[in-house]
Image (cartoon, rainbow, N blue to C red; front, side, top):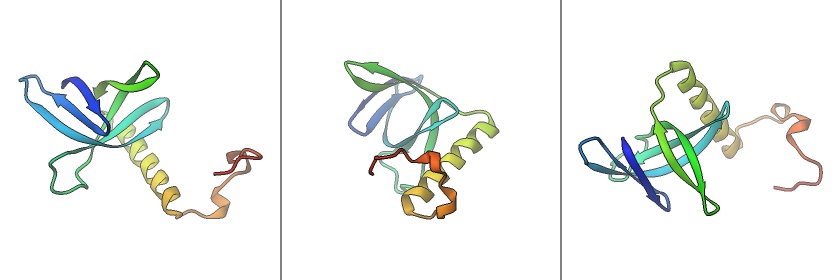
Length: 112
């Protein structure tokens, strides 16, 4: 896929034949110094239809843009991304135990 542009939370991807597809940007996650984006087809009947790509971000005029998307071909890399997403979801849903938190995770004086 080539030419990428997005408006708010929608990204338009163009394939090699010039066909365009709209995807909703669901989330970004950082794993091992790489950024990954989760996309769902805009017209999907099932919002659980999610595609994960490694992405390269570009800063322009103080804004971040997706410069390139790459398929994840390594199973181990994909599993790390899934694990990070599951941990993030557990944290957001409050499905964590107090002992899971380590003292260095908190900066003194910061409030959420």
